[in-house]
Each structure stands twice: as C-alpha cells, then as structure tokens.
Length: 400
Image 1 (cartoon, rainbow, N blue to C red):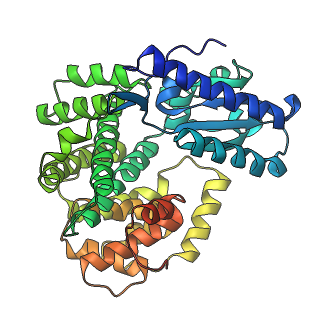
Image 2 (image 1 turned 45 degrees about the vertical axis):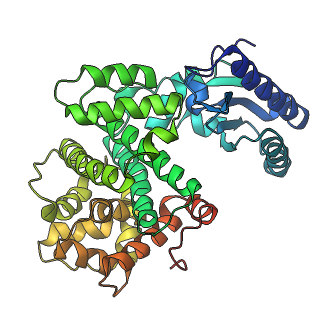
C-alpha cells in the first residue's frame, strides 16, 4: 500500500519505521475484525496529512506525535473494542509511542454535518485498512460547509491549554516534563488561534505546510504573531524544546495572551456579525445571539428547551433577549462564553458574577473560580482532560 510520506523533515529511516508500525497495527486489526464489520481504519492528524513531527534525541530520530486512528465500522463491534485497545496498549508500550483510537459508524459519518475536523480528515488522512475511497467520497466535508461556531470551539479548546499553563506557572519549581508541557501547549494554542484567523480571513487549508505559507502572505496579521505561527508550525514538524526553555515562559505566555485576546475578539466579531468594543459586553452579545444562532429545526429547539429548564436564571440586567439566550445554551456552550474571562485574565465584575451564578459557586477569588471552571470543563468540555491533569500532577480539586 502506497501511503506516501508521513513527515515533513523525517529521514527515510524514520519514515520506514512509521510505515512498519502502521503495517503491524493494520495486520493485528485484520486478525480481529471481519471485512464485513468495518469500512476502513484511517490515520488522522499530522501523520495522516503527511506532515507529522519528528523528534531528535541524542542524534536519533523518533516520531513525536501520537498515532490518531479512526475505525469506521459497519456493524456493532463493541465486544471487540477492548481487544483492539489491548492490542494498541501493548504496541504503544513496546514501541514508546502514543496511540489514540476513535470509532464512528460508516452511516453516521457519511451523513454527518461538516465540522473542521471532518474537512481536515477528508483531505488529510491515510487509509491503513479497508476502503481507500470511502472518506474522500464524503462530499459535504468541504471548507465552505464548516460552521463558524466550530472555529470558536477550536479557539476554546486550544486556549484552555493556556489556562492549564497558568496553573503550572504559579508553581515555584517545575519539573522538566511540566516545562515541556507548557511549551507544547503554547505551540498548540498558537497554531489553533492562527488557524482560526486564517479561517475568518478566508485563507484556511487542511495542510500545515500550506497554512504556513498562507500566514506568511497575510498583510492584515500582526507581524509578531506571524513569526510565532511560523515557529509553531516548524516546532510541529521538528520540535526543539531547548530553544523555548531557554526563555522566560511566563514572559512568553503574557505576550501571547495579548495576541490571543485580540484574535479571539476579531474572530468573535466575524462570527457574530457584531462589533465588540470591550469584554464587558461580550457575554451579553453572545447570549442575545444564542436565540437564533442555529438554523430552525425541531431538534435544535428541543435542545434549547431542555437547556432552558436546566439552567439557572440569568443574573444580569441587560434585557429579556439576553436572559433568554443565556438559558438556551448548553453547558459546553456556556463554558465557551466564560472561557475568555479566565484565558485572558479579565477583571470585569459583571462577567464574573454571571460565571459564579452559572457555576453555582460563591468563590470570589479568581484562582478558585478558575478551578470551578476547569472542573466543569473536564466534565462537559473534554473527557480526556482529567487524564492529562493526573499525568502531569496538576491539581484542581474534586469534580463538581
């Protein structure tokens, strides 16, 4: 099977190593799954794009990123999933590489509404087992069908990594693994916010190499941020932690926080089609927009009705539409509205009061309120969040 290249800067030796590992995984999957049970097993992420990262340690190349696999099944394979996870777990330990496995039915994927990740997947994947044409044939997965709210999700997801960095940077001493995690989070956030900017400037691409070139060509983008984006893309291709660890991580974080805040506001204005002059008015504008932010459908209005009865009453005093829109939003959507307060270290009291009321907390200290937010995020925003916190010894207290 001709998969082409997996990396941008890797040698033939590391390319062959990655190819050999994927062939072994495909062979093991083929032993467990019957042909009529699955449509395809595909490789996503950097290696799926042919733009994966290569880390050089003591002169030896090795893959830097995890293998992101997606099993697209035709029949119920629930009973076989644990076997597949066990195989990948043993393989991961033996080869010292992380492997993530997602699953989705072929029918659901074929009729799924376009998301940014599905667009990226359609054009940036490699089929390691099964029908090579299936994913590429899903025609609704094109850039013009990506909803603007999905780009908000991208900025919130990547920006939450910066909130974790803030927790780490408050420690007096950091382990090397924690310092490297801060750098990795910074790079991911830079790329995520740069991608969002390119999207709203109508210059997004599924390819990191193409996005790197597109960002260099922008005349509307701050030149300092362009340099950071370029460096982050290069880091993705071939990480150099020492280059960044030699600098003051707190200082870098604060410089980038200002850039991210400006980009988030710009993208928010483009998404909401509203001028936002300051952060004080941001939550109310989002809440008012929530009433009609999605096309009419019985399903969307049913969800809004459920949210309405589950949410607390709005604590602000800015009108009926704001209060109604607030109660229409689900937990994840509300967390997205509250995200800027913590990520950009805002001090607006109105914003803070709305967050406290929604999170059902009396905490006045921002540091404690932030932990309340992160506990909610681990429950509704990212199911893998708690595992990451545990791995790196980051404490946020018990889940609410």
